[in-house]
Length: 260
Ligand code: VGL
Ligand code: ZN
Image 1 (tube, rainbow, N blue to C red):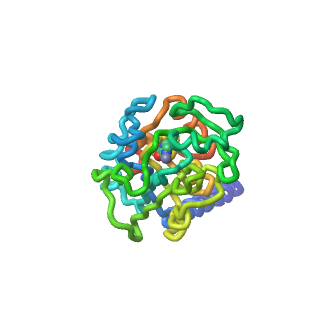
Image 2 (cartoon, rainbow, N blue to C red):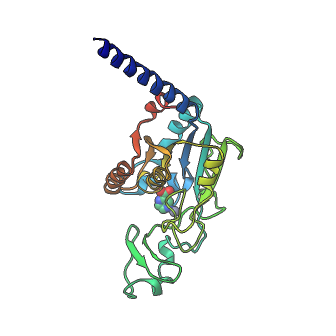
Image 3 (cartoon, helix red, strand yellow):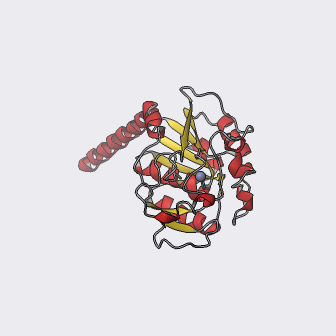
C-alpha cells in the first residue's frame, strides 16, 4: 500500500504540474478575429451572395460579427478586403483578351462559375470566373458601413488582397499560388497572436482558404460558421471537410465566449 500511496502522490504532482502549465499557457494566448471581405460587392454589389447558387445573404453576417466584437475581448481584429485591379484575372470580362493563355487556345463560351486553366508566364493557375467585383477604390469595394471598425491601430488591422492582376487571392494570407504573402501574417506575429477566429464572406472561398492557411501557419484556428455565408452548397461542403483536415475547428458564435 505504501507503493500505491507513492504512486498516487506522483500522479497528483503530475496533474498539478500540467494544470499550472495550462494556466501559464493560456496567459500567453492572444486572440484575433479575422473579418473576411465584409464588403458591399458580396452583400448587395456585383457578387452579392444572394444571387449565387446557395442563395445566402451576406448582410446577415454583419450583426453577428458586431455582437462578437462588442462582447468578446479580442486582442486584435483584422479585416481583409478583396481589392482587385480592373484587369484582374478572375473577371469573366477579362478572359477574352487573356485567351492566348488558355490551355487549348480555343474560344469557349465561358460562363460565371466556370474554372479555366491559365498557362501564360504570369498566370499559372486554375481560375474560377467571376463577374467583375471589388474593384479598387470603387464604392462597392468598401467595408460595410454597418460593420464595426475603427482606424488602423495596435488592435485594428486592415489588409487588401487580390491586387496582382495575374493571380487571385482567396486566402487573406497568400495568393492562390502561394508565391506571395499579404502583410497579415507579419501583422499577427508582431502582436503575438496565437488563436484566430475567422468569419465573413464567403465561407467556401475566402473564409475557408484563410482558415486553412491560418491552421497551416500554426495558429489555433476556428471558423465561426454562423458568422459566415457561402456561395455554393457543394463547395461549402468540400471546404468544410478541407478545413477540418487541416485542423480548423468549426464553431458557432455562441461558442466563442467559452474559448476567449
Ligand atoms: C471571394 C470570390 C471572388 C470571397 C472573393 O471573398 O470569398 N469570392 N473573390
Ligand atoms: Zn475576388
